[in-house]
Image (cartoon, rainbow, N blue to C red; front, side, top):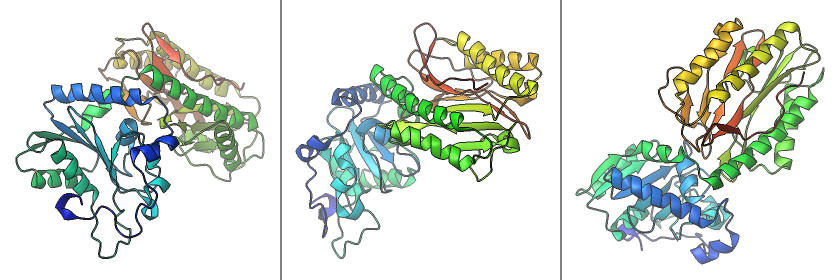
Length: 411
């Protein structure tokens, strides 16, 4: 029996055992378990810094990044997943993202945490069983770890219900928002993380090479997307990192658009933005080309964007201020007469597609060694097209390393 005396397993629930020993032979992790234990140690240090005795991490369809990052659990069903992390001691994990009452049909075998207690999904038919919920399990985890009277941090999106539950259940505790703690921690990558991201970048490279090579008069945007996805999955992608963008001709002047039945014509600029997910880690890359030979202006537009990337990445290193890097991009665009076409953008990438650091003009943040980011300073002109060489980069001790290998010119 769990909290409030509710049965843990309603009718038809959990016929396949999912204790740690049952999960272990099937566990598919991107890293040795020590990588995850090290994350918890780093998290414990930050919790001590912020005065937290316990942290409850919520993942749901809005954002499951932190749960995947800390547990390797992937929600295939759509539910609430919660990890209880005491400052000292073992974590406890619960989820109701369980299909037809079987955690082992729902990816729980990939969760490395030993203490896992699943609950019925809210839409599961349980009759009169009134089974334990994920919140009951959270209550048990906190009580068993002796954290009910301290400061309990909450991390995740849409945590209002969780905060109310904790405040009502543990009136002697202080409930505090800790939303930025894990995002801060994810910013600096381990060597193992970099290697997994490198693999995700290779998958995006395969997608872009296949699609850009397939550009010809008469091919549809749908068919170009199909070429990219075929190559990406054939090379080992887990999922797309995000919805693919494919646009050609005048549509290419809007950059991010879903593919359509539009047939590419000679002289069209064709743009693609695609990313792959591999073992929970993402890549993000873009390329463009012209169907046939580019005009002098198309060529100058595309070459200027490449020069912007090269100028900025030459100056990128630990300690570089992002706002100052934006000034370098603006200077090159202005010299070429493209000041009004430049959008200086980029973002951290890894367990999340969009993470820190954020590349935007005026940002006073500085680069640090082992940050990984997607850099996409784009030239975009309505009715004309998009020029955007976007790749993923790692900050090294003295500069940056390009993690993608896909060629940047098809002209």
